[in-house]
Length: 256
Image 1 (cartoon, rainbow, N blue to C red):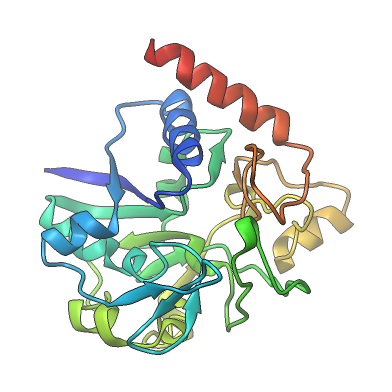
Image 2 (cartoon, helix red, strand yellow):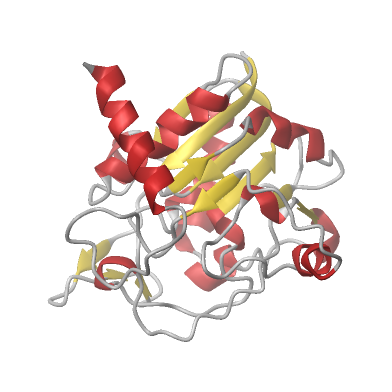
């Protein structure tokens, strides 16, 4: 049994991003860190996930339950995190992030911001992209509370966690908007843990800190427009690209 674990969404198109996310998380961890992958084929084999989807001619993904496009293979399955974590013997908190993260601090510190009266803790981005495509040419969808679900710290003792039926049948917008929860069930983490390069700060707290000339530290970077790998189209260069590349090179070196 463990009281905290970190689950990373897996997209087969981004193996380097996954390597950097896991490597940087372990590099900064102050104590042993349980990391597991949420991969849709494995979840299907384990009978956690049965949403049918297909790849369209333009390479985009289409969910056949709600008829809507989505951009990453874990778009819906991310909401299985608390169910999978409980089945894995995790007792208190389970963290989920997308696979394109670069950690610059100890993610165990996130549990210090965790509010046991909430079902889920997120960074409440006010993110309104103006483009119609994102990383690797995928469609840029717009929905309520966009970007909030890219980092979710789930309270496994809550009575309002998503259910198997919900994750496998509800519209994507319902899931990503946390529509089954009351506003009071959602707690807020510092934007320092979910920094979107070229866009942050977007949260009220982050903007207030910047306005007071006390900018937030940057503890976790989300390369939502794709990491700096060859062939990644429709991405914007960021001030953190060299940090990401150096982490990848270090991860490869450590694996030798």
